[in-house]
Length: 171
Image (cartoon, rainbow, N blue to C red):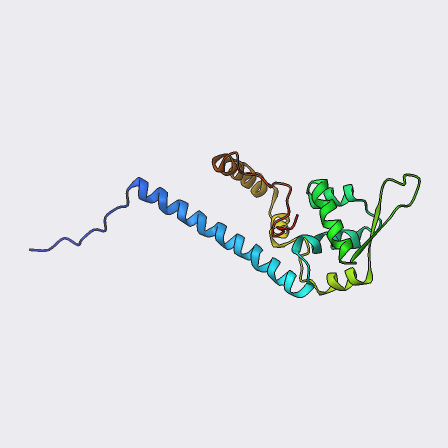
């Protein structure tokens, strides 16, 4: 008499759901660890945080940029940009100047020390996540946006920080 081969038990829908959630969590860990490792490398080689390097790169690309324009370029709140500028000024990497007709507005410029720090920093200056997102097609970005919006709603009201640069706990 022939014996029937043993069949592997099928996972329950709850088990499948849990496995799918664990798989997505592992992908988030890969992304978060890539971001964290990049920011560690930036800080180790440039001596400043990833957000500070990003700010230096924007100021370098747009000499005379104001704090408001810096905030828009980095997609952060103006107070966050002000804190970055203050820290970089304290480190003598950025100088501010009041030029033109409106003396209230400041223009930002890199110092030689700021240029040296930027030259040492590994790219991408905005970070690996913004760089990777820019390389995705529009449809993928739209789908990610919709899906991550659902995730943010599940995280709840304590989810915040949409205008705080990743890897920068100082601001």
